[in-house]
Length: 90
Image 1 (cartoon, rainbow, N blue to C red):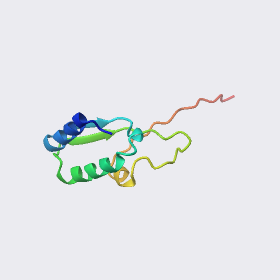
Image 2: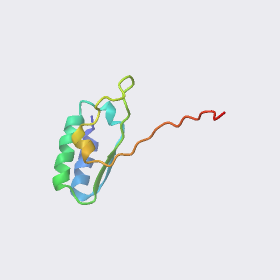
Image 3: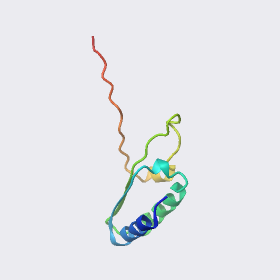
Image 4: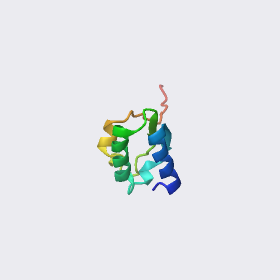
């Protein structure tokens, strides 16, 4: 869950413009619905220079678990990272 300090910062940046980075949202499963609502409101009324970035990782043992709601994913630019495996070509 976001601390009061970070929540105030988020609110300030949605009003005045600024960038927010939320790290490891997969660890904040109880707060994700609140984030979803805040981003819906921000999409309608935030400052034109407001940006929200976040990172999430798959849950061990459940790589296809829905960590981030589809409504957020549909409005995001997604960047993936995958592990490269080198194989012996011989």
